[in-house]
Amino acid sequence: GQRAGALWFTLFCLPQQPAKKSAARRFSVGDRVACAVEDESNDYSAWAAGTVLAVDHSVAEDAAALVPGREWGGAAGCVPYQVGLDAGGKVLAHRDEHWLVRDLALQPEGPRVDAGGTRCLTRLVRRQSAGGDGWEAVDHHTRKRRACAAPDSEEDDE
Image (cartoon, rainbow, N blue to C red):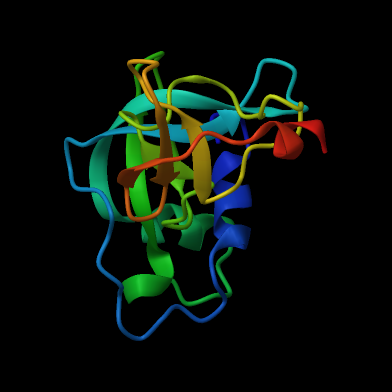
């Protein structure tokens, strides 16, 4: 997050026992991403554009100052990404998950809700292609797209 106390929240979202083997990260330094951040109301979240500044970023020193009784060495004191936002400021992504960080080419900035007004957290999305000439299925975890059939009217009526 971008607000006061954001590191505190990030630390408590980290796994209690980090994975022994770190999984390959989906993004690299310099990649353009959309991050889930608080919106202006502090009640909802939005996708904000940014650039990955660091991968497996250490927060161990700051974490030890906030929570001195816990061991923050190694993977325990790292977050997958530090992202510099286009609008200013930096955010930490506490997990490498599609519902927190997405490829900016596949997820534009804006509200983090779907057409029905519910939070947009799904990994797989069917949408009209960028040119508007067809439909595509997007996997926000693997960052792959493929052409697909348009939703039929029965699905839209449900």
